[in-house]
Image (cartoon, rainbow, N blue to C red; front, side):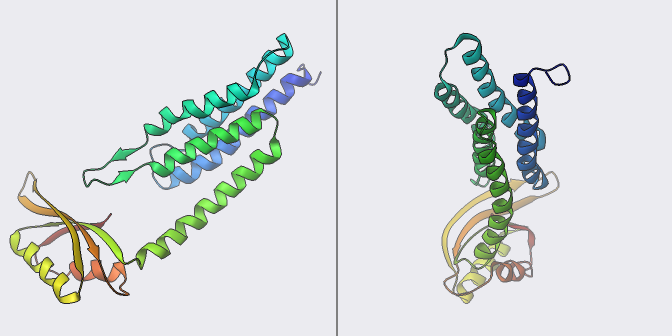
Length: 225
Protein backbone atom coordinates (compact mmCIF):
# COMPACT_ATOMS: atom_id res chain seq x y z
CA UNK A 1 0.00 0.00 0.00
CA UNK A 2 1.38 3.41 -1.05
CA UNK A 3 -0.56 6.57 -0.08
CA UNK A 4 -3.60 4.40 0.52
CA UNK A 5 -3.34 2.76 -2.91
CA UNK A 6 -2.64 -0.88 -3.65
CA UNK A 7 0.24 -1.82 -5.96
CA UNK A 8 -2.18 -2.41 -8.85
CA UNK A 9 -3.91 0.96 -8.27
CA UNK A 10 -0.55 2.77 -8.09
CA UNK A 11 0.61 1.23 -11.35
CA UNK A 12 -2.75 2.07 -12.93
CA UNK A 13 -2.34 5.72 -11.96
CA UNK A 14 1.17 5.86 -13.46
CA UNK A 15 0.04 4.17 -16.68
CA UNK A 16 -2.85 6.58 -17.21
CA UNK A 17 -0.65 9.59 -16.41
CA UNK A 18 2.04 8.40 -18.84
CA UNK A 19 -0.56 7.73 -21.55
CA UNK A 20 -1.98 11.22 -21.10
CA UNK A 21 1.47 12.82 -21.40
CA UNK A 22 2.50 10.76 -24.44
CA UNK A 23 -0.78 11.36 -26.26
CA UNK A 24 -0.64 15.05 -25.42
CA UNK A 25 2.89 15.38 -26.84
CA UNK A 26 1.79 13.96 -30.18
CA UNK A 27 -1.37 16.07 -30.16
CA UNK A 28 0.66 19.20 -29.48
CA UNK A 29 2.45 18.81 -32.82
CA UNK A 30 -0.92 18.53 -34.61
CA UNK A 31 -2.38 21.51 -32.72
CA UNK A 32 0.61 23.70 -33.61
CA UNK A 33 -0.26 23.09 -37.27
CA UNK A 34 -3.88 24.10 -36.74
CA UNK A 35 -5.38 20.64 -37.23
CA UNK A 36 -8.90 19.91 -35.89
CA UNK A 37 -7.70 17.13 -33.56
CA UNK A 38 -5.20 18.56 -31.11
CA UNK A 39 -3.62 18.08 -27.71
CA UNK A 40 -6.75 17.11 -25.76
CA UNK A 41 -8.07 14.77 -28.45
CA UNK A 42 -4.85 12.78 -28.72
CA UNK A 43 -4.42 12.69 -24.95
CA UNK A 44 -7.92 11.26 -24.54
CA UNK A 45 -7.37 8.65 -27.26
CA UNK A 46 -4.15 7.43 -25.65
CA UNK A 47 -5.70 7.36 -22.15
CA UNK A 48 -8.75 5.51 -23.45
CA UNK A 49 -6.64 2.84 -25.12
CA UNK A 50 -4.47 2.45 -22.01
CA UNK A 51 -7.51 2.26 -19.75
CA UNK A 52 -8.99 -0.47 -21.96
CA UNK A 53 -5.89 -2.62 -21.49
CA UNK A 54 -5.77 -1.89 -17.75
CA UNK A 55 -9.43 -2.88 -17.43
CA UNK A 56 -8.71 -6.11 -19.25
CA UNK A 57 -5.80 -6.77 -16.86
CA UNK A 58 -8.13 -6.09 -13.93
CA UNK A 59 -10.64 -8.63 -15.29
CA UNK A 60 -7.83 -11.18 -15.58
CA UNK A 61 -6.78 -10.60 -11.98
CA UNK A 62 -10.34 -10.60 -10.63
CA UNK A 63 -11.79 -13.50 -12.59
CA UNK A 64 -8.73 -15.25 -13.95
CA UNK A 65 -10.03 -14.99 -17.51
CA UNK A 66 -9.77 -12.60 -20.42
CA UNK A 67 -8.07 -12.07 -23.75
CA UNK A 68 -5.60 -9.16 -24.02
CA UNK A 69 -5.26 -9.55 -27.77
CA UNK A 70 -9.03 -9.26 -28.31
CA UNK A 71 -9.30 -6.05 -26.28
CA UNK A 72 -6.40 -4.50 -28.21
CA UNK A 73 -7.96 -5.50 -31.53
CA UNK A 74 -11.22 -3.78 -30.58
CA UNK A 75 -9.36 -0.55 -29.77
CA UNK A 76 -7.44 -0.57 -33.05
CA UNK A 77 -10.55 -1.22 -35.16
CA UNK A 78 -12.72 1.19 -33.16
CA UNK A 79 -10.30 4.11 -33.50
CA UNK A 80 -10.89 3.96 -37.26
CA UNK A 81 -14.29 5.64 -36.82
CA UNK A 82 -12.70 8.57 -35.01
CA UNK A 83 -9.93 8.82 -37.60
CA UNK A 84 -12.43 8.81 -40.46
CA UNK A 85 -14.08 11.87 -38.95
CA UNK A 86 -10.90 13.91 -39.45
CA UNK A 87 -10.66 13.13 -43.19
CA UNK A 88 -12.39 15.58 -45.50
CA UNK A 89 -12.45 16.60 -49.15
CA UNK A 90 -12.11 20.36 -49.66
CA UNK A 91 -13.85 22.46 -52.26
CA UNK A 92 -10.80 22.03 -54.49
CA UNK A 93 -11.07 18.21 -54.41
CA UNK A 94 -8.11 18.05 -52.05
CA UNK A 95 -8.07 15.35 -49.38
CA UNK A 96 -7.05 16.58 -45.93
CA UNK A 97 -6.82 14.88 -42.55
CA UNK A 98 -5.08 11.63 -43.55
CA UNK A 99 -2.03 12.40 -41.41
CA UNK A 100 -4.21 13.31 -38.43
CA UNK A 101 -6.19 10.08 -38.82
CA UNK A 102 -2.99 8.02 -39.02
CA UNK A 103 -1.59 9.81 -35.96
CA UNK A 104 -4.76 9.08 -33.99
CA UNK A 105 -4.43 5.42 -34.91
CA UNK A 106 -0.79 5.19 -33.81
CA UNK A 107 -1.62 7.10 -30.61
CA UNK A 108 -4.14 4.39 -29.76
CA UNK A 109 -1.39 1.82 -30.33
CA UNK A 110 0.83 3.75 -27.89
CA UNK A 111 -1.98 3.68 -25.34
CA UNK A 112 -2.28 -0.09 -25.74
CA UNK A 113 1.47 -0.52 -25.20
CA UNK A 114 1.44 1.63 -22.07
CA UNK A 115 -1.73 0.01 -20.75
CA UNK A 116 -0.19 -3.42 -21.23
CA UNK A 117 2.89 -2.35 -19.26
CA UNK A 118 5.24 -2.13 -22.24
CA UNK A 119 6.63 1.22 -21.11
CA UNK A 120 9.82 1.06 -23.18
CA UNK A 121 7.85 0.59 -26.40
CA UNK A 122 5.43 3.37 -25.53
CA UNK A 123 8.12 5.92 -24.62
CA UNK A 124 10.36 5.07 -27.58
CA UNK A 125 7.31 5.20 -29.84
CA UNK A 126 6.27 8.69 -28.79
CA UNK A 127 9.86 10.01 -29.04
CA UNK A 128 10.32 8.56 -32.55
CA UNK A 129 6.91 9.82 -33.72
CA UNK A 130 7.46 13.29 -32.28
CA UNK A 131 10.94 13.75 -33.77
CA UNK A 132 10.23 12.20 -37.17
CA UNK A 133 7.03 14.25 -37.55
CA UNK A 134 9.10 17.45 -37.54
CA UNK A 135 11.86 15.97 -39.72
CA UNK A 136 9.45 14.60 -42.34
CA UNK A 137 7.47 17.85 -42.36
CA UNK A 138 10.55 19.88 -43.32
CA UNK A 139 11.83 17.18 -45.69
CA UNK A 140 8.45 17.12 -47.44
CA UNK A 141 8.57 20.90 -47.92
CA UNK A 142 12.08 20.64 -49.45
CA UNK A 143 11.02 17.89 -51.86
CA UNK A 144 7.70 19.44 -52.86
CA UNK A 145 8.99 22.95 -53.56
CA UNK A 146 11.18 21.58 -56.40
CA UNK A 147 8.87 18.78 -57.57
CA UNK A 148 8.08 18.57 -61.27
CA UNK A 149 4.35 18.40 -60.59
CA UNK A 150 2.38 21.26 -59.09
CA UNK A 151 -1.29 21.94 -58.27
CA UNK A 152 -2.67 25.44 -57.79
CA UNK A 153 -5.96 27.21 -57.24
CA UNK A 154 -6.39 30.68 -58.77
CA UNK A 155 -9.09 33.33 -58.84
CA UNK A 156 -9.14 36.16 -61.37
CA UNK A 157 -11.38 39.12 -62.03
CA UNK A 158 -12.21 38.14 -65.61
CA UNK A 159 -11.53 35.78 -68.52
CA UNK A 160 -8.64 37.92 -69.74
CA UNK A 161 -6.71 36.89 -66.65
CA UNK A 162 -7.21 33.20 -67.44
CA UNK A 163 -6.02 33.75 -71.00
CA UNK A 164 -2.93 35.55 -69.70
CA UNK A 165 -2.28 32.69 -67.29
CA UNK A 166 -2.46 30.05 -70.02
CA UNK A 167 -0.22 32.21 -72.21
CA UNK A 168 2.37 32.33 -69.40
CA UNK A 169 2.32 28.53 -69.12
CA UNK A 170 2.86 28.13 -72.87
CA UNK A 171 5.76 30.57 -72.98
CA UNK A 172 7.45 28.96 -69.96
CA UNK A 173 7.12 25.40 -71.30
CA UNK A 174 4.74 24.41 -68.49
CA UNK A 175 2.22 21.72 -69.45
CA UNK A 176 -1.33 21.92 -68.14
CA UNK A 177 -2.26 18.36 -67.09
CA UNK A 178 -5.73 19.24 -65.82
CA UNK A 179 -7.91 22.30 -65.41
CA UNK A 180 -11.22 22.52 -63.55
CA UNK A 181 -13.14 25.74 -64.03
CA UNK A 182 -15.92 27.25 -61.95
CA UNK A 183 -17.40 30.63 -61.16
CA UNK A 184 -17.05 32.15 -57.71
CA UNK A 185 -20.15 34.21 -56.91
CA UNK A 186 -18.83 36.65 -54.35
CA UNK A 187 -21.13 39.08 -52.57
CA UNK A 188 -19.26 41.96 -54.17
CA UNK A 189 -18.32 40.60 -57.61
CA UNK A 190 -18.33 37.54 -59.81
CA UNK A 191 -14.85 36.00 -60.22
CA UNK A 192 -13.52 33.32 -62.49
CA UNK A 193 -11.53 30.55 -60.84
CA UNK A 194 -9.77 27.28 -61.65
CA UNK A 195 -7.92 24.39 -60.07
CA UNK A 196 -4.94 23.59 -62.30
CA UNK A 197 -2.52 20.64 -62.34
CA UNK A 198 0.84 21.45 -63.91
CA UNK A 199 3.90 19.64 -65.20
CA UNK A 200 6.79 22.10 -64.88
CA UNK A 201 8.93 19.91 -67.13
CA UNK A 202 12.24 21.30 -65.86
CA UNK A 203 14.04 22.40 -62.73
CA UNK A 204 11.73 25.21 -61.65
CA UNK A 205 10.86 26.18 -58.10
CA UNK A 206 7.18 26.27 -57.21
CA UNK A 207 7.71 29.59 -55.44
CA UNK A 208 9.08 31.11 -58.67
CA UNK A 209 5.97 30.04 -60.59
CA UNK A 210 3.64 31.48 -57.94
CA UNK A 211 5.63 34.73 -57.75
CA UNK A 212 5.33 35.19 -61.51
CA UNK A 213 1.58 34.48 -61.51
CA UNK A 214 1.16 37.12 -58.80
CA UNK A 215 2.50 39.70 -61.27
CA UNK A 216 -0.22 38.91 -63.83
CA UNK A 217 -2.89 41.56 -64.20
CA UNK A 218 -6.31 40.54 -62.91
CA UNK A 219 -5.19 38.05 -60.26
CA UNK A 220 -7.32 38.10 -57.12
CA UNK A 221 -6.08 34.99 -55.25
CA UNK A 222 -3.64 32.10 -55.67
CA UNK A 223 -2.76 29.14 -53.48
CA UNK A 224 -0.72 25.97 -53.97
CA UNK A 225 -2.69 22.85 -53.08
